[in-house]
Length: 237
Ligand SMILES: NC(=O)c1ccc[n+]([C@@H]2O[C@H](COP(=O)([O-])OP(=O)(O)OC[C@H]3O[C@@H](n4cnc5c(N)ncnc54)[C@H](OP(=O)(O)O)[C@@H]3O)[C@@H](O)[C@H]2O)c1
Image (cartoon, rainbow, N blue to C red; front, side, top):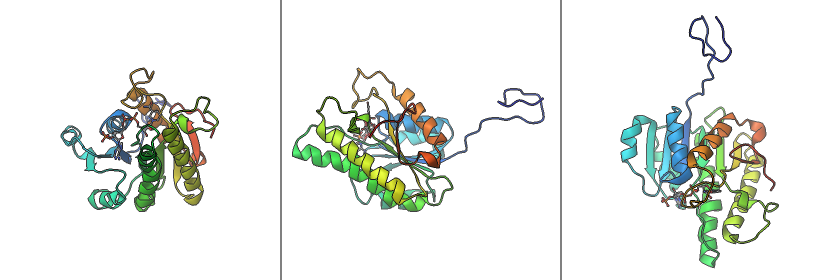
């Protein structure tokens, strides 16, 4: 007996939608969306490397060799080198730049916010290109925000955060032309219940992370340079 979706157990061939195991590196995995992206990826059988300023190494015991944790600050320009020298893998299929901050709008807030939200993910990706190049379908993902959309800005405020994500969007649009072999993807995760999103946010981290991961894995080269939500809606720049 043959079935297209593979739930029939008697038969010669079973077709099952099997997702191949990927090597996924995620920044900002200590909490919030990054932590859930890490946990959901591990549950799906992928190998994950989490980057955190203060990693909880007891998590490695739980997931065994599928999880590598590296202590690192995305604002450290040497982080890429540290990852390359520490990681036992020789390639990365999916890099998810998730770490981000939301501060006020003083001069110093602007400096810190642009460093963490725009400059760091761009340069970390450039520094990890040698590991991404080794894959047949490499993806560099950037967790941006709808608040970085100039067209969508109907209320003002949160200027450093909005501007840092708008800058990130521009950098990654350029990256999609400069590195045509790489699938460069920008995603808004939704308004999510985390310390950044606050408790009034309508989305749990699991809903956002599952939506993001399913779109990331399904993304094709034609999606490179696009700006979409966790549910696949295209956003205006
Ligand atoms: N929540 C939302 O509604 C929402 C909406 C739109 C976009 N986003 C974006 O989604 C991403 C994740 O946000 P979230 O809501 O999960 O925020 P969160 O709960 O505040 O978590 C932020 C994560 O980023 C890490 N991080 C910050 N600066 C870092 C640095 N210099 N080096 C390494 N890690 C650093 C934090 O680590 P520590 O524990 O060390 O601080 C933490 O793990 C961000 O890029 C954010 O802009 C969130």
